[in-house]
Length: 186
Image (cartoon, rainbow, N blue to C red; front, side):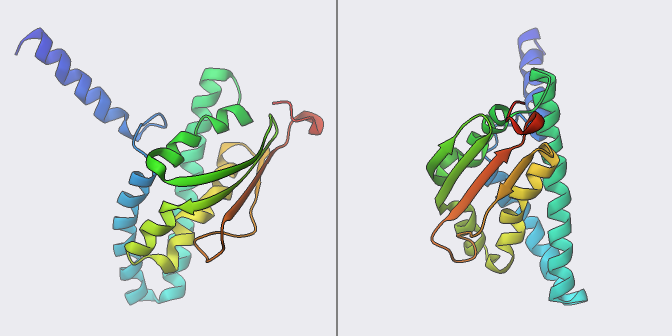
């Protein structure tokens, strides 16, 4: 093995090893598809053995825990780079979720302490329906959004009254980043 091929192998291993880190370039929609393939089997198995209610509750709790853990990793990375989390560090993550046209967004407001937009097309919802997971798509995707805020920074709050996954014309995302003494300063 030459030094060059050893170096290339190390680079590939480092790249593979970093696939689970927050800075991974794997589009979030692809990550969610992979997770959903596994969770579909878990959900079906739980429905058979414990009933629909328990299956949904178990999936919901597992996804909440996963979302919080993922958010914490992103927050830790933001703190390591910037010393703190902020609306700017949160917004820097948006390309992971929108990559490959996963979401079509109509921006309403973007300030240092507020973010408001409507999602007019959600390929996550489309994907879950196509996978036969429409009945739990809201558990696999939509519920993550508020839970992600909890794991990222307690000051980041999401209000959403409707989703495409549950049949609305759009998802209405309204984030507020509560700063020191309500000023929006991070």
